[in-house]
View (cartoon, rainbow, N blue to C red):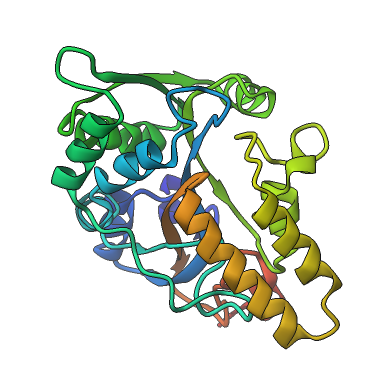
Length: 280
């Protein structure tokens, strides 16, 4: 940011906190633009853990998260809530999926039904990177889960250690984002039972015969319409079972010095806009 203000760089894209975005908006000679994005942020679970193998417990966790408040007050409104890995306006997205409602009372009831109580609360560890903004988000999630009786041990690590643990299945909960998603082939890589690392990115060890069948049928379908219908059914199934809690699609933002024109943000946050950017 300081290099932008000093004229050492002409343009910045993403990795700007809401506070920095607002700071730059007030600076003369700097323009700031924001656009809808498709990068998907989620809360992941280790489904081999007996405390997280029950979909009702995972749904209780989802219902305890006030995503709208987080987007509004922590992220400065720079995201839209998600129900699936693919956004609803993707050709294989499912615009009919409901959003998971914030319902702490339902979350408490589900946890009681699962055998947890004030005397015997659900205790989980939650891993994240040391990125300050990600730690801030994790701290808010920790606080919201505490409100329904879930005790969360928040652990932050340097990126290499954190990501290594996630790939190895050494976690209970974590949060990450999928970026640059363009095709629904991502579902096989993320959710098929054969995609457990190192063969893919099924880091939560999700295994569901119906989901596998839909993934395989969609890959073999002869038309895009047939593929889309199967992928939409798959996304409804995933929302039912919740191997991930869908959180949001983060917006993209760029800040440019005066005189920089023609740069356009893409949905997946790539840098193709550099092809058309120019200086006045």
